Image (tube, rainbow, N blue to C red):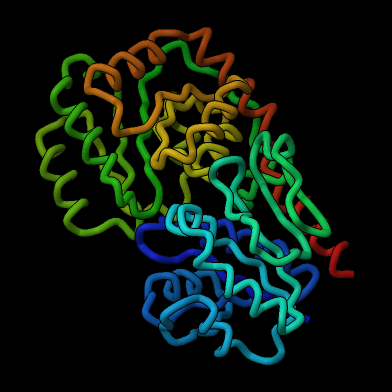
Length: 351
């Protein structure tokens, strides 16, 4: 038996959905073969899967997701779907036919969903085999329409590098700041922060500020960032790193988006993080994450002024006790073994 993954891969979706499915696919190989389904117009995801030696099939571009099922091999009987991106959360009916056609073919569907306002589940979806919500606090959400429900931060999906990170010692001086907004950053929040740091260079002249340019970031976005930071001596541009782990290990403070992966990676490494929501529907989960003490949620990025960014970063840099407390809370919350636990649970369900 093989498990197939169908995840959001369009540029506006970022890389978070694909990367967590890659990490889960690697963990599930203990139990069975894993494959990916990629629409053939998306080339970068295919290149990325090749680097991880993960097999995939391509399907033609179709008018809707339901029609795509026509091109699936008859041998498919288990599909893990990770499509809870902004487009589909706002328009869940786009996936309704897709799910119904899979169920009609007797395919067991495991849905990796968002939580609260950021989830797909709607009234006309079929009854799922399993719904997975691998997020901090997701177990407090309403139980979904499924036979099995796997939820909570204990199942946070991170790569192998984050397993059992050593306990972090917080530095008295916060001299290293990491800024990362995922694989593509379609909202160009990195550009905005480059401008903030450039305009307030004296305030943060004692910090090395690293800006991560994700592997799927648009060339025009990269050029904007490079141009802004060209004469900023304490800024460093990191292009398409294989992992954030080495950068997080060296960072004293991180500024991140609301994607679950980077927030949990920072927590696992014990890095205090300032986070901003990239879409309004992430607001609730960001506030919930903040309640555990390892992040400070600043609000939606469109609502933040230059002064707001500077004040929040400066205050966290100057507050050693707060950074130490946030670091301890993060490592208590996320241990990096969530993907192993999730693979075990999926294996039990399929046994």
